[in-house]
Image 1 (cartoon, rainbow, N blue to C red):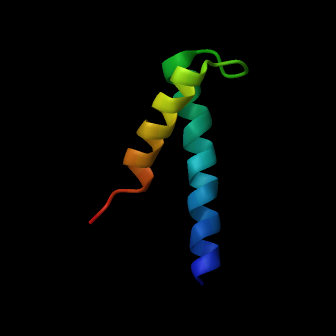
Image 2 (spheres, rainbow, N blue to C red):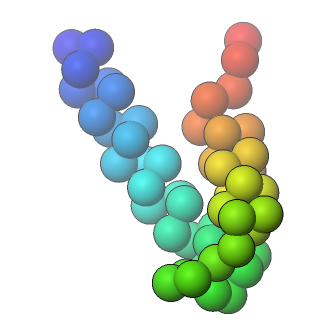
Amino acid sequence: FKHSINRQLLENYDEANRAITWKSCRLPVTYTLACSQQVVREVQSNFYLTP
């Protein structure tokens, strides 16, 4: 059960990562480290909210 939840989270993370990278950076293949760090922060804030 827990594994399936983690897998779904990872799939959502991957989809959101691609979408946000495309929208924010517009360099989906070779975006910069700073941009990828911003993407990670955005995705984490969306998918890993703390209670």
